[in-house]
Amino acid sequence: MRSSRWIIATAVFLLLQSCGSTKEVSVKKNNTDHSTAPTDAGNKNIPARVINTKDVSPDSLVKFAQTLTGIKYKYGSAIKEQGFDCSGFISYVFNHFNISVPRSSIDFTNAGTTVSLNKSRKGDLILFTGSDAGSHIVGHMGIITENNNGTIRFIHSASGNAKGVMVSGMSNYFSSHFVKVIRVFN
Image (cartoon, rainbow, N blue to C red; front, side, top):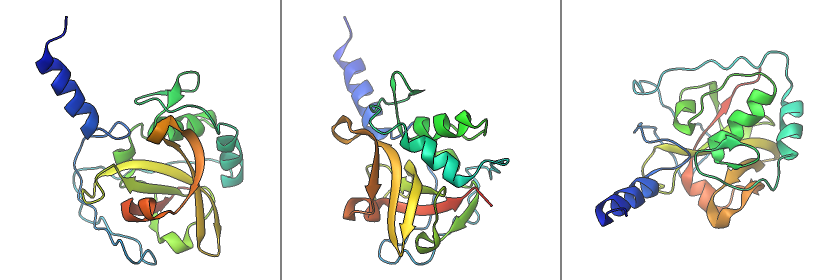
């Protein structure tokens, strides 16, 4: 029988987790104007990452990602048959094309090239804080499926109500949790 202390510790741990990340990172955030990308220059906690997308096109990647719509959410998983958390979904999609990417959402903080939200395009990765919008810690992410004159849509694995892989727009919730967009395709 598990002790109540263990159960409480486990519950606190799960509440503090989001998409498999626990490291704290300071990322400057601008909640009201997404026309300029936040900066994370000088962030020494997360190493810079180069993602070699080889000859894969953003269109191919997004098209494959969309075939996974409806796969359930499962914390800590990158296995299709079990479900995905947000970074597990990203890992699964990129690994399908033999593209190596970090497994944890926070490890994308210094990957690729930062671009402004309004200049984002299909295949860019969009990063959000976890459930605490004021934390500035990357804890959720998705792949931009379209930018239609500033109307952004992205595919991600969402934990809320066990929704799983779905396409969303920039609702007030996501706008308040937005950290930045990174470009990994040239």
